[in-house]
Image (cartoon, rainbow, N blue to C red):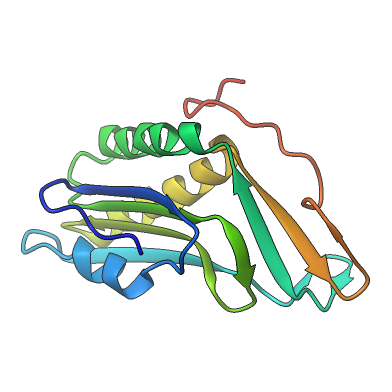
Length: 157
């Protein structure tokens, strides 16, 4: 299981184990931060045109994931310098319906920055980190609904 770092303010990782959602939120709390925003993306039982989704499975280009997550965290800190702690975690392997596949947490002194940073974190992670999803549903399976073009964190291809 992923464990929070002892001394850093960024917790970045990839794991094939269940993600520690509550631990991530608790770790992000600091005395100087009055806001903690957590986004947990959970596997759901449907997708557009796909009834009865039973599971998701994620694969990653592993050696590129943590460096990309570090770029995202750096971008978050550049845009919101008052951020306290950042968590960017993603799961690989099979993720049953109801379990988290991705966790993003941002803490800051005030809620506006924490909400904006967390939104940037998940949106940028989805667009820039080389992780792919296969859905298995009642009538079949497929690697995502459509191909996704991976971009750099700064938005370039």
